[in-house]
Length: 108
Image (cartoon, rainbow, N blue to C red; front, side):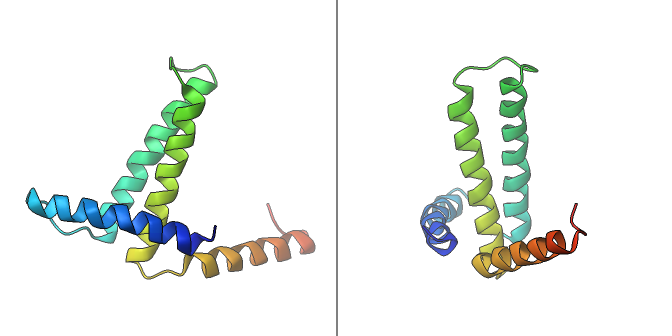
């Protein structure tokens, strides 16, 4: 599945959340809101990784890590969408730059 397809799937649930938020009187979702979601999801992921490495208690840790990684991906894709970033193009270009740096011995 391509990032654009994942982004579309994410947009479908995002649209439903936006509508329910309007019904509750929430404000418009801006890129800053999606960045807040990303930061929250990264914190939740960090908690689960800490549990996996024995620094916190937890149950079903691997399943929770999978969920939090998916949440982080969703937030990144929605942030990209709302900032009008072509994530597939940007990701591909970033990989090319890194590979070029590695080939020249300047990565790291």
